[in-house]
Length: 217
Image 1 (cartoon, rainbow, N blue to C red):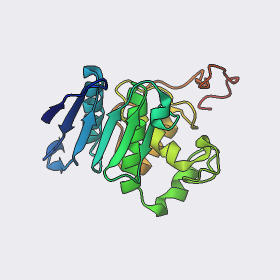
Image 2: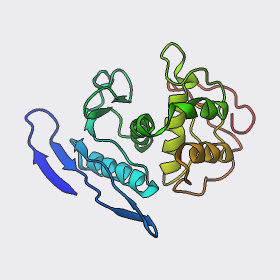
Image 3: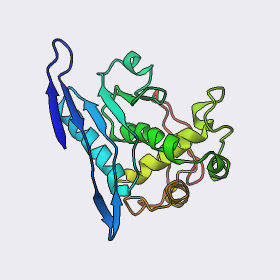
């Protein structure tokens, strides 16, 4: 890693890292060329989490495009009203983080990976593997009905160190997530899938919950 520290006044201290992975051996004879990623973080734990997340993509052999990750504090308005948000139309791509969450960061990074690596011809077949998906990325449908959000959740699940069911997009049982991860990446996740689901977590963001349905839903 190449590190450069930037001093800020009343704002976060910014630590910018240009992560250049020249070659990383994942399997005998297999090397991965990783893109540059800049990190602006106000806390050492945020810096470490971003480095960890980028390394998870490298370990899985999933090349990320050039991008910048910015930790902007707990005010969700800094992230477009979300806990984390990606801006794919920026050059380089920008990820804004308002929650310190490994899962959310892996999810946002997955959007960057998917946009550059999943062919349009694969959208419909992937959507057919999932439940309740009506569009790949249209904002005219609910978040949980977008194939792109399902793809980001599937990839984030596959890169966790401690796998657990991902709420919000279904099916979320290990077998279904494994099949979806393999379809998108043509590789296996970085874990064994975790235990089968008996009582799926269907908690909503506001703290309310829906009745549990059958396993994986």
